[in-house]
Image (cartoon, rainbow, N blue to C red; front, side, top):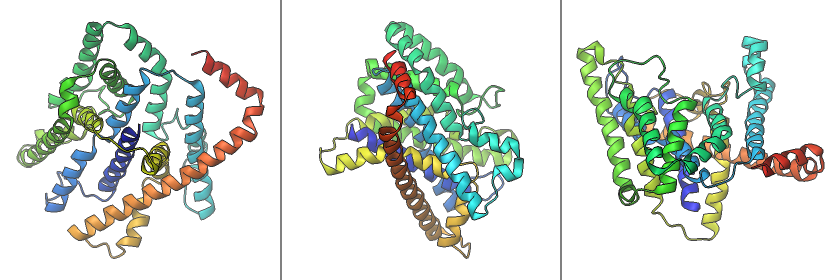
Amino acid sequence: MANYELLRILAMVMVVVMHFLAHGDYLPALDAPLDGIRMIGGLLEAFCLVAVNTYVFISGYFSVKSTFKPGKAIALLCQIWFYALLLLAVLFLLGVPTAVQKQGIYGLVQYLFPIETEHYWFATSYFMLYLLSPALNAAARNLTRRQFQITIGGLLILFSGIKSISPIVFAFDRYGYDLSWFICVYLTAAYLGLYGWDFLEKKGWIVYVGSCLAGFFINLSTWFLSQRWDSFGYYFTVPFHYNFIFCLTGAIGLFFGFSRISIKEGKAAHAIRKMGSLCFGVYLLHEHMDVRALWYGWLGGIINPEGNYGGGVFFKEMVFCVVILFAAGIIIDWFRSMLFSFVTTRVITRTKLYQKIKELDNAF
């Protein structure tokens, strides 16, 4: 469905924008003056923060009605390995320090076992979520509607509702950067995929915009309160946590907003589908453990070598970084997909391993 693939693309662009804002130091901060650029950065962050939840929501909404394929999990793992090892080799040849030189054997382990070491935190949680999806889908399809509502309600109160109003941080709260929160979002999406909600289907855009603005104004208000009372310092960060209630409702609203978008079949729809299938590579490229702290300096040195600061510079840097990272990620992942397709067709399909994988797929 081209409209949801377009949403997937938008979500990845939002992820790059968020990382640009963080690395460029363009977000509101308690130890920095709140100027116009930081306010714009905070507003952009509020509207982009839903991207991660949106990505997971898309999976839950459609996967609950589909069949689990172990081969797809293996392909996802190979894609993650491809970037982890390829970028290590490229950086080594370019003389850029990597975790292997800095941490020795422990650094090497992070490339060989990217899931277990959280080389990419999102990829780790997303991969584990996919492995759990057959159990989650079976539960979603076999619970009564009332039982499902009670289950989701309890999970959301525990993982989102309470923390969204708490003035102190909880020991088990990882701000939505973990598998437990992804399960909550997945099950919420599965419920809406099975039963729907007319209000969201009609008012999705209003829910999205309202949720993002609410998060922004809460963040802005607590900045001013924190200048006088230090006790507001923690809650200042809460609206920018993935398990904050308005971050979840914003993602749901954005999803249902896109459900009303119609894209005519043709070359544009085909291009959107193809790009949507490749955009995960954008994340794996710029969030590689050896690259994530360097790319802003590299690109900033090209577009803003004097290190100037101002509104024009801000927008110029943002557009340049987003376009370059997104285009590079899409192009590299297109080559990866071609390589994987060639190897699979010419080599892997002729092996016993391929037959074993097909047997695993058929088991579901």
